[in-house]
Figure 1 (cartoon, helix red, strand yellow):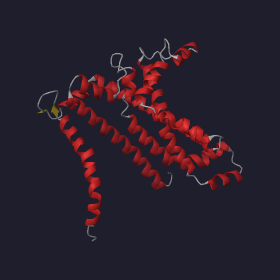
Figure 2: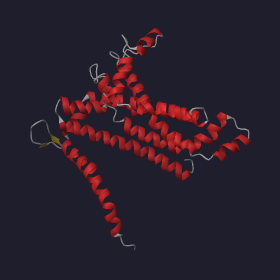
Figure 3: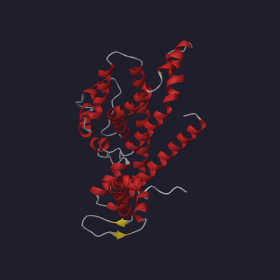
Figure 4: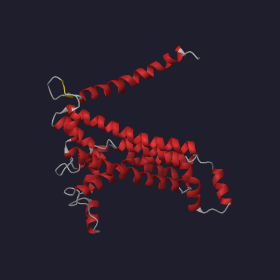
Length: 289
């Protein structure tokens, strides 16, 4: 039996210590906080799973969970589709490719707060340039009073802001595909669309799945777009889980319920990621990914 290498443990110890300080210890404390009644200036009082039961009994939590589910799914799949199309166009050899890539990356360099406020101004139905133009075309978004319109606008802003991340992953995946496969497809007489679906897309599936997992994890924490645009209103109808958590923690001072919501978000994200990873693992074993 091979004995453990003490040198390897010592070399890995700083990384483990860093992970414990920055992730494990705060996560365990939040878990403990979720089992206690806590607010400003009071001692913790152990209440067991009471905070979780209170969260589950709150209709606003389920509304926030529903909004999160639909918005996150819409954001991720639209974003992946757009990123794939843009990457495919750029890989095909359009002129000024470096300039176009720089333009695509610009939204990722902008502050989320500034981005949302600029979009909020542009989409204002009274004076916003885009908002007024959409109304003239009969496609206006009445996002200040309509929860569904507000969530659509949240999705548009989020896709615009985070598209560069998905684009970079997928573009790198496309660039890694051997050119010889495209030359062979051209010799066999395959057209552009056939080459994309028969060569590019199958080889790009692992990259797309990784991009989907990352974007789902990031999008699940969606907060600034909703908070700055609607504040969760009207009547809490546009709240997502992160806004629900923030309201519990800093508006009502119920840290126990906020911690319970945070852990429910972590568990939900882990379950979702596990399902995707299981499909990826099964696909790899079967040779489909």
